[in-house]
Length: 447
Image (spheres, rainbow, N blue to C red):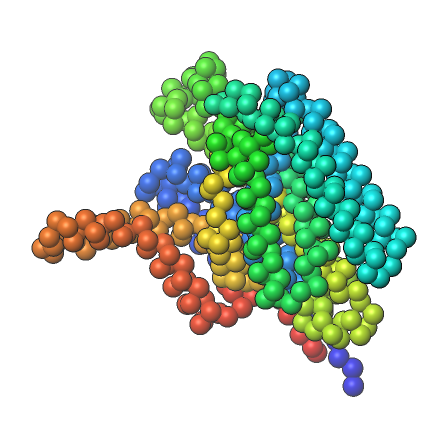
């Protein structure tokens, strides 16, 4: 008796167009009842969240890897935006450039020496020699790097205090951000991917905290907690549009203020860029999911021991998908900094925002790219709208009831916390009535 596996195309699932249409109607409702600038701002953040969710889904939905360090990789994307787009600071390079160069040479020499010793020695002698080399190399690196970084941070610390960047178009930083995150994921994966899923989650969360701690404290690189503002934009600024005669004529013709129209056009331009990136990534992820590689990854996820028994290199495949998913998160991190126009390391909260990304994947449907994107839109939309909705609800509830001024003020202050309640409620409802998410993973049927 033979069986044949059949798969229905994603487009045949009626939930996909219906749920996406409902999400579009929700965004349109914000435009009609609040403002179109708010609707476009939410749309842009939803698009970035959807890309991050897509990267997390690549790791969890394809391979079952629980990465709790998503914010660390997103922060590396922000670092890329600063190092690529900001103009260089010649005074800082003159003050600390030679020292940084010698420190880089010391790092390279230490790595080369460790690799040489690992090839030439064996057993306990090799481990002792490598450890001693790392310790000696560390002191050499600090000997050159510390005076250099102190000199750089002393250059106009109120406005600069760092090395600046390359002065290139910020769109290039989106690619570089993906490369930064991919490189970090490769190094992390070589160490941590041999761990069990729960230990992997702890390790990645700890590594994300380390990445953020380095970014916050190494002010010579990206100014640390003093933040980097005034990043170049990939689209024209509002004030630039308002100085153009054709734009002023257009605003008068449609009866809209130049300030409002310029904001709508700029945010709309961002949305077009983000949609283009999302479409490209979506196509690539779908092709990967439906390829032999994607089927192999799901087989490893479902039964790791059986896949290993069939000759699959499980650790290597996990490393591949870990690097690819982290690269997507790094791209989204660079896009977020480009949208904000500033890099603020203190705003990266690994626990809170990593939790949000995982809620997006779980609610949307892990293992399904369309579900991950929908989850990114839905959860971020609720996260943003929950605060004004909570304030409105508290105003309605307390307007007709005789509360004391202290009680009413307390209830109004607690209204923004409704978003946390809604996140938990949405997750519980979805897990109860649709455990596989709003758009479940497409499973093979046997005929």
